[in-house]
Image (cartoon, rainbow over all chains, first blue to last red; front, top):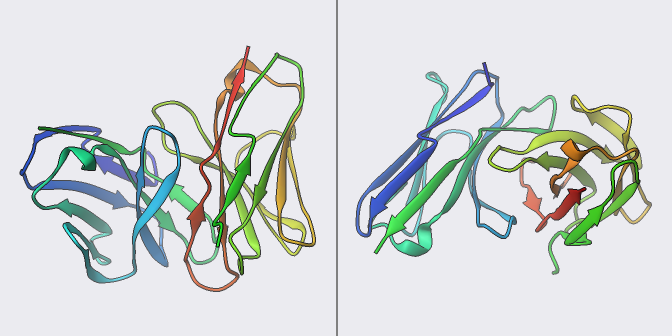
Length: 109
Length: 112
């Protein structure tokens, strides 16, 4: 069993839809990252969370430390949101990231 | 600020050859981590360097080695390349304290 599990693996939505991607982890963490990866390969950090909720534009990330669960929400989705979204757990002692396998999001116009 | 830069961006090698990938961390960051990402999968941790020493290592064979220079830049070396080493190799930099992390664009390695 992977230490970081994401769902769904693939997600297709129509433009304007509300999207949720889920992440569960089994390790103790100091922070959880939500990352975006476009086909070219580069990864961009969207959020770093250790508690509560963060919002940036149409993106919202929440984390429940007790339940070891985090969600990434995209409101009013747009085709340019199409990418792979990855959650990664940052364990305080190891200072390394453990990644989920990613969610391929495709938003259709 | 150039962020994290990696080179080369793409390369093709033959089985058995050796490859060196390079990474310059974001200004102010002294810790460099390397990850391997196979197609369709999440990145896997290879190792992490700070103070010019390997501090942590993932589940990768000794064919994978690295180095960190006094200016914090880093190299990843892979010897005796296998077809299965074909992947995107990502470098990430971070400061000693805190959990901020920045990624480079990656180096696409194809082994034929």
